[in-house]
Amino acid sequence: MTKRYLYPAAVLIIGLCTAQLLFTFLVYLSDTALFRHLIAIKHAGFLTVPNDHVMMTLQNMVPAFYGAFFFTLTTGAGLSMAAFWLILIWLRFLNQSRFIFVCILIFWIFILYKLNSQGLNLVVSLAFIITPVIVGLFTIRLYSQNSVRLKPLNIIIHFIVIILIGAAWAPKLNSNAFITIRDHLLLAHPLGKKINTFYYKYTLYPAETFKSLDQKLLKTCMVNIKDKNLYQKVKTRLRQHDYLTVDENTPIDLTIFQKNDRLLFQRNEKIMHQCSVDAFLDTPKHQLELFSENCDKNIFFRQITFLSLVVCSPLLCYLFLYSMIFLMLFFVRPPAMRSACASVVCLALGIAIALPLYQIHTEIETKKTPEILSALQSTDWHDRVFALKTLADKNLSITQSNIIQKLFQSPIIPERYWLAKDLGSSDSAESYNMLVNLLNDPSPNVVCMALYSIGKKNRSMTTQKIIALIAASKHWYVQWYAYKSLKRLGWTQTK
Image (cartoon, helix red, strand yellow):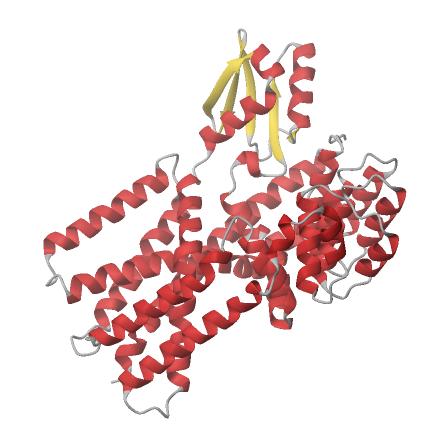
C-alpha cells in the first residue's frame, strides 16, 4: 500500500540519475574544450583565468561530476517532472489515447527544435531525449491502477501544503532573494556553509557550458587583415574586449576578415556577422555583442534551466522531503494518515526555514543615514548585515574606525562580505588597506567582494597585487572576480 506514495519519488530518482550521467558528460566536454582554449591563450603569452592550479582540473571527471549537479537539480528536475506527469496523466486520466500520445511527442519535438534552432546542440539534445524517455518507460513500467490511485484528500493536502509553503516564502522572494537566502540561511548554519562552499567551488564548471561568447571571460581570435595599420587597430579593439589572438592551429572563437570596406566575423567557418570597418572601430563592444548573439545556441537551454530552477527545483525538494519523512513515520500504520502527517511536517519545516528571513528588520532600508549607522551596533547580526547592505545600495561609506575594526573582526561571514562592499565607496587610505587585508579572508565570498571594491579604486600597485593573487589563488571564482576587477581598473591583456 505504501508504494503508491513513493512511486513519484522512485521514478524521479531514476530520471535524476540519468540526467546526472548525461550532464556530467556535457560538462566534461565543455571543460576539455575550455582547457584547449586556455592552453592556446597561455602559449600566446596572455594571462589565463582560471590559472594553472585550476586549469589542470578541467581534464578531470570529478569537477565535471560535481558541476553537473547544477544541471541535474534544475534542468534534469524539469525534464524528469515534465515527463513523469505527462505520462502519468496520459496513463491515469486519458485512457492511454494514441492521439494524446502523439500530441505529447509533437510537443517534445517542438522543444528539441527550439533547443537547436540557433545551431546543433547535440549533447544537450541527447539529455532532453534520453532523460524523458527513461522516465517515461519507468513511469509506465512501475505503473498500476492500484498503486497510483491516491485518494482525492491526499492530493488536496499536497496542493494546500505547497501553496502555504509558497505563501510563506513569497514575501521574501525578490531580485535579492538568492543573496538573502545565502546570507541569512546558508551562511548562518554549518551545513549551509558547506553547501555555499560547494556551490562557489564548482559553479563555474557548469556555467561555462552554456554561456554565450559575450559572457565568457576570455575568447580566442584570429585577424586576417593585410593592411598593417588596420590590423593593429582591430587587434587592439579585440584585446580590449578579451578577444585574444592565438596561433592558427588552435581553437578559434572568432576569425575576422576584411572584404572591401567591411569586416566579416566568422565562427566555425560560417559568417555570423558583418559590419563596416568604421562601425567596428567606433563601437567594437556593440558589434561583438551582435556577433555573440548570432553565435549563441544556448538561449533556450538557459531559459529552460532558469524556469526549472524557480519552479521544478522547489517542487523536487518538497517531494523528496515528503518521501523521507513518510518513510520515517513507519510507526503510523494507515498509509493515508502517514501521508497526511508527512505533508504537515513538510509544511512546518518549510515555514520554519523561512522564519529567519522575517527576523530581518527590513525597515532599516527606509531610515535616514544616522539611523542606519546606529543599526551597525545592533546586538542582532541580521540587523547589522542589512544595515551594511543598505549602505552599500546607497553607496554610502562607514567613517567610524572603531565600527570598521569591529566588523572586520566579526566571525560572521555576511558581515565581512558587506563590509568589503561598503569599503568600496570610501576613498580613504584606511579603507583601501582594509580591503587588501580582506584579500586574505578565509571565505572566498569575502575575498570576491573585496576584489570587486578594489576594482573601484585607482591605486598604484593595485593591478600588480591582483595579478599576483590570480597567479597564486586556487579558487576559480576568486580568480574570476580578480580578473573583473582588473578590467574595471582599465587593465588590458598584454603579452
